[in-house]
Length: 177
Image (cartoon, rainbow, N blue to C red; front, side, top):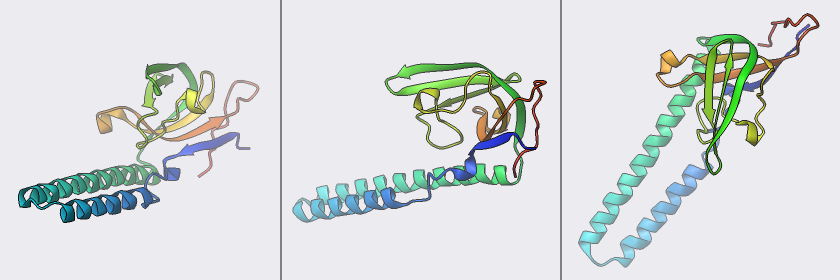
């Protein structure tokens, strides 16, 4: 009997499934450049406008490509099972409010520290407790994560399963694949 339920997977991250916003930004900035270019008589200002446009579009495209590759890499790690896994009970769960609307949540599972913010919308689980987060003290979990020694930042949560405790306090560790 499986008493663990998958509640988060990096595979469900839909950050880059829709290109609607990037396309709208690209087309609106192109229209703004055309309007600026056609209304401006000064050749120097026209050149500066084109250079600025190219710089902004390059930065935007570069940032989108970098983020997409980062998420794709995390999904590949998850699919190939090159992650670490910790099984245990959440302890020391803390939510710190840093600024208005900006929170940092931390907790431990068997002395493995996890930290995430609600500002970082890519790169693993990031739903803080105050924004309908599903994690809390004393929940028994299986967490699949990318080790902080691998990415030089923090432990990145790639998958979470929440388990029911059995009468003896043990957990049935059969998980869905």
